[in-house]
Image (spheres, rainbow, N blue to C red):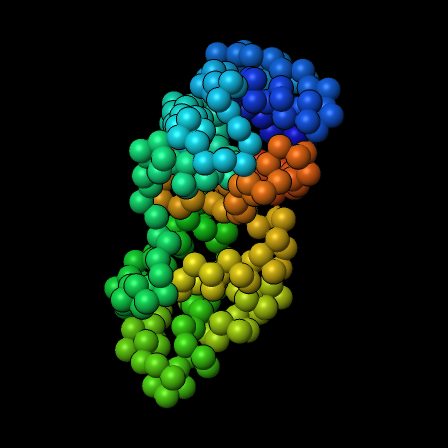
Length: 277
C-alpha cells in the first residue's frame, strides 16, 4: 500500500491477514513477494512477505499462545533484517503481547521497572548518559534546535529535600554538569507542569524519569497518536504505543489510527535516519 510519503510492505501470515480482512469487511488484494523490490505498490494492494507461521486450526483470538508469540518475534526479526540489509528504510511494528513472547521462550531486555526499583536508577551518571543518548537521537531525527526539559521526580521537585532528596543529590547536579558540557537542558521542572510547557513549545523534548510519568502525559495529550520510537539501534523503528486489546480481538472494532501514525512517522523520519550518521 502507498502512503503520501512511503511504500509499505508487510511481514506476516497471509491466512491471518485474509481472515482479518473478512472480519473487517475489507476487499483486500494480497500480493505475496519474497523481497520489497518485487512489490506492487498501487493503491489497494497489500504487499506481503508471507512467513506462513500460524496454524489456523489451533489459532484462537484473545488467548495467550506460544505459537503467536513465536510468530510475532519472527515478523520483527525478518523486518529488522530487511532494514539492516538496506532493503527497507524503517520498521513500524504492531503491538506485541509480552506474555505470548514469554510462552514462546522469547525474552526482551526491558526498562519497565517497579517504582521502588526505579528510585535506585535515578543517579547523576544515569541522567547524564540518558541525556547524551537522547540528544543524539533527536539530532538523528532532525531535531537540532531547542531545549530538553528534565522532569522532576518528587512533588514540587522535592522542595529542597522536604519531599525527597533525589533532585538535590542527583538530578540538579546532573543538569549542572550537562550545561557545563554544552547541552541545552533545563530542570528539574515539576512533572505536573513540564509536559504542558513542552506542548506549548517551551521545550523540544522532556526526559521522563520513569515509565508512566511520560506515558500518562503523552497519552492524555493524544492517546491514538502517541507513537514510540526506539532509540539506540542502527535502524529506525517506530511502534504503536498501546497493547493487544485481547478483550476485543477478532471483533473488527479495534482502531487503526495508532498503526497508521506509526507508519507515517517512520516515513517522515526515515530520511534523517541513515546508517552513515
